[in-house]
Image (cartoon, rainbow, N blue to C red; front, top):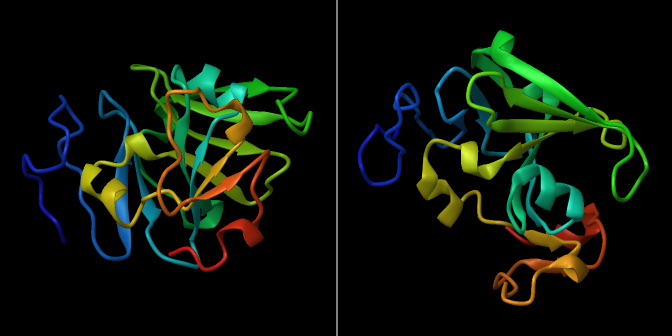
Length: 176
């Protein structure tokens, strides 16, 4: 188990108890009220991707979002499930289907999203993972999607598949 240190874990009020192992890692909201355990390996870990769609840009308050898709059955709530509130988008950018967004009621951190187009899957924000060093390796994006919406100053991620529109499983085949 990797322990808390100043190498790659945030030092924020209640979110300083994060950890990671070979199999799992924690993800915590900014104030620490909500903490989850996510899988770092298959079958629970489905993919890691960057999304440039306008929905992700707007809801994430950034020009793109870094995401981790996991099987919902493999996502565990350690604390704070009662501290989550939801906002339902009834018409998403691509599929005109609903997307449920789960935020911390206290600090407003978007923890994850679930959509009717993706039954059984949860899309987490990579920035909520406590071991920030995982983004350099095990949680490095495999694919960038909606690249037609990417801002001009943002360059493609080396080694990541580049997909117009939404990616499919075939786009990340063979990408570790």
